[in-house]
Image: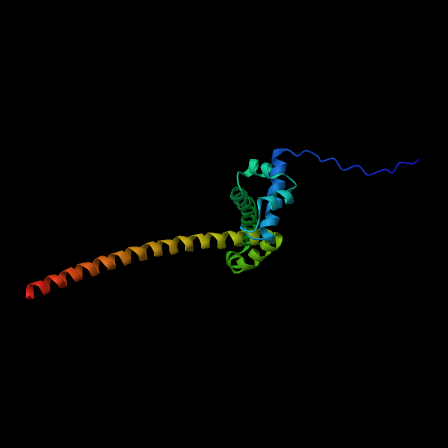
Length: 168
């Protein structure tokens, strides 16, 4: 009787901490580029990196910590690529370098389109946070204005009542 042989699962190579961190960052960049920060779950991020959620927390502390690490790592690489392109042009001709900033930006985006989506998302989230704070301040301020208006109305009414009392 022949035994059917099943292929053995591949043994995973244990990565060093810095290699694992780089893998997690690369995987997280893909997840954040595919979806928004809010839509990306810690489970999605861990699965994409082929790690457990506790391992993700161990390396980055939180989803926000991971998102910020992605921004730092790949944002710096993006800016470095853009800066190098502009600096290389500027060595030859500064005006040409200034005229071609948009072309260089486009080339840097094409080199890593995922980070562009992540950076844009970060700007949108940041602007949303600022707008929410401003809106909250406006609501709080409008509450203060309403209270002040009410207080002013009471003062005026008391004043008018005082005038009427004197007339009688």
